[in-house]
Image (cartoon, rainbow, N blue to C red; front, top):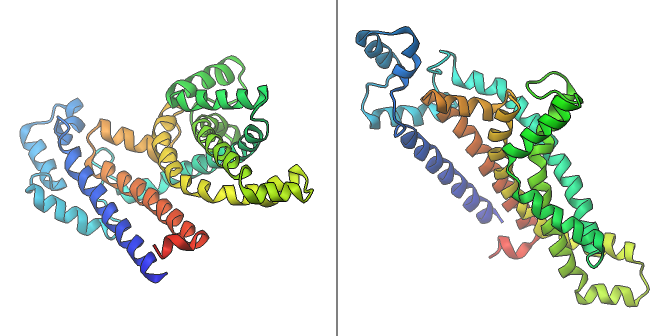
Length: 307
């Protein structure tokens, strides 16, 4: 078991290094000098631009910049934001709670709705209700987050006035962003759980349970659902990617002051330290989530950790 854990940890560390390295070099391929972008409105002289570039270390050779970034990143020090002049680590910490609130709310909605709809879709698979659920889930996967968020904001925010459409005002502010983010995840969970449940319900031990006279509810809850949830757990690694990727879009649609909103703004103004810091956090969370899924799956299925 220890070999299994160590191997997964080493893979996670290498993957994190690869992601932050790729972002470090790719962000510098975007046309435009970050200092000139920041000072465009004040008509700064060439001497001022050169001085600011020197203060930020942008005049150093690229390998030297990369080495300095990696050394500081190991201490979670991502430097100062070019646009605000504040430490990037502090700005990230200020925005992580908002993103966490959105992600947890969306995940809770998606998990509950996915379990209920997946069970209903499998139980009533030959009825109109089951087919309707399956059709809605296909629609849920197909709808882009930015379009769905805009429509929800127009209908429930602007027209009906039930929920705020931007910022963090009160508890209602998280409803529309969380629902927008949860729809695609709910559809994925529902379709997977339906498929797995149908496979499990056709197994020999389920037929044996029916032959013994056990009720459908007892078979579903105590036998089928327990075994069907094991494969579903692995999907949560992919769900983490959907949450983080969707958060960038949804936070910008609703002006939600989270890390996704911060990262996209940083890209638009060529704020290298902010982009690198936000990407590091996103990658670390995603890789950690996948690592936990791998480890939990290894505990649930001993064949994996000894394979």
